[in-house]
Length: 424
Image (tube, rainbow, N blue to C red):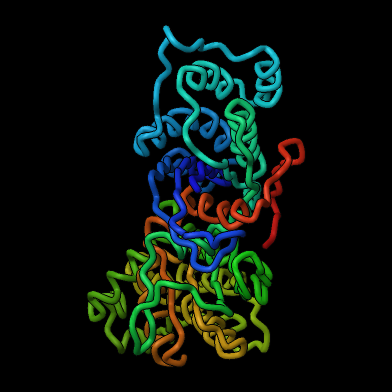
């Protein structure tokens, strides 16, 4: 099965084509061991555009999506060897009037996309795909609608079925794409065994998901306020670091770990530190709570108060930036790993999956590997997606779409809608 996937939930415009390599059992369909080949996965980030505002502006994201979807689709088809131009002598490049009016109606709120669509799509042959997968939520609704409407227009003109995909499920199944698995004290595992536990960590979400089988998800813990990625971004802004904040904090923390004697006291002597009674130590919110929920707003507030106290003492914050960033990062990592290991033990998880943009954090990945090896049994496998597949991309949406398409779970185009707060 070949899936064309579309992702526009936030500030990445992405189109991918993914082919399933699973051999389906005779007489029926199933999901015993889904595996995939990414034929193409084109991602265009808007980070540089949103950088001036220090965060994503929904209507700007929408504008960029409608401007870029057709060029990105062309690149994805070309890379997959599925782009075949029509011959003007053999096939008319006209869309039938009945379909033209429907497409104009579907894309009436995306005029720039409509104009490009009517120029490009009639000039190519319908690609040999089996279905179209599109993100319907969670995310920024203005951005989501662009991808949804684009999928509806393509499905109409190519006569293909649509699969509605939950963006967070995409982050879960990214573990099936270009993944490195670590089987503790044993051989590497290629098959995700159940029950599995997914830690999904991004700018908008932090949640622990119990997976009984593909498609059967239960959120057992989630953030009560700020997500981990949001905490990274907001504390980075307090430290006047560039957007996006997570990678900047990680970079500063790496400097601290490489040169601890240089940065541990920001150039101060130990006596000066003791005289000022100044200690860079931040809380680990809810690390000892009996549930699996998270909270990072308290950490953000603690950083705010610490920086305010430093300013009042006329302490140069820049001298201590690597030290502070290391402590922020470690506080977040400690909570994430502690909750994950605790849940894995309680639910006897055979597999642990790390997903979401924050999963690209190298220190989180390294410390999670050590914690799984130290705390869990030799039958537990840890799945870490390749770093390039942790951020938003359409390949993961295609893989998640396959999990539904293979069982005939398709959406009615007229019922598709953006759901900004959609949950697993």
